[in-house]
Amino acid sequence: MHRAPRWMRKAFSPDGTSRVVTGLIEGLGLETVCENARCPNLHECWSQRQLTFMILGDVCTRACQFCAVSHGRPAAVAPDEPWRVAEAVRRLGLDHAVITSVARDDLADEGADHFVRVVQAVRDRNPGVTVELLVPDFHADPNRIRHVLEEGRPEVFAHNVETVERLSPLLRPSASYARSLTTLRTASACETGSLIKSSLMVGLGETEEEVVQTIRDLRAVGVTHLTIGQYLRPSAAHLPVMEYVSPTRLARYGDLANAEGLQWVRAGVFVRSSYHAVDAVRPAEALPR
Ligand code: SF4
Image (cartoon, rainbow, N blue to C red; front, side, top):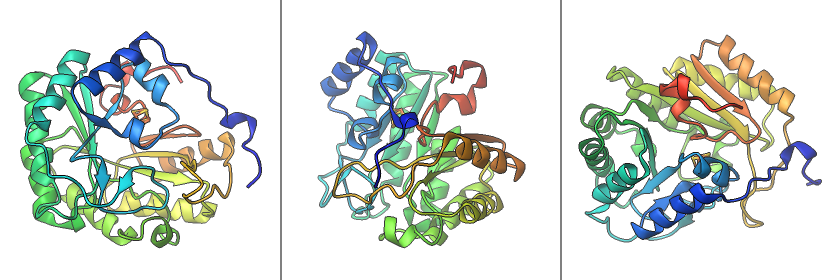
């Protein structure tokens, strides 16, 4: 792959606030996807006290070919993790908590009830907080999905389709495009009032037609909120970048998604699933971009 173009350069150094976040996360023994996935936005987001907690450990039972999170056999679930996440939200003064997890196919409920316990602890300790949950596919099990939605009541229920249908077996060998759509359709059908969100990476060899079809597929299963961003290779062991998609084309994808009827779309080079996530529930707090 050729060198990254100029628009891919992002310089943002740690400031005092991001150092505070680092110390607090380490002190409470928590994991973030910001660190584990080597997100390029880490210092920018953390300087704004925006982060994404990663629960259920730091080892994933799946081995997606784009993801930097470790995979293998996870440790037992920490029963005090809900309290620690809630305490971090309180100490950081967050009014919007974004929480994801590794996939836990080894657990009987794939971690669904742990998500609920984390949300409940966060709400108990932080009245008025809003929550976005970015969940694994739960094998599209309606009981697990309904449990998270009805007992957790997240303002945003997110599950990422990640890529177009043709590339899904390559990127996500333990998942499937169709199953992710079923998970999202099931969540939407629960009608609990949660916003239904997904995310798509580009630059992996997909065509523009495939991107448009994916947007239509997501819309058809009830997705209302969508992020689209450039894939970046976390290491030489991961899938290479096939293309650096220009900011102009990313903006066009965003316009196309809006034209297809999605309510809220963010498309840009460094846009990630959780980038400026608060913007989805409190647009007035949106950061300048
Ligand atoms: S975009 Fe999401 S994962 Fe990346 S640093 Fe920001 S909050 Fe963390």
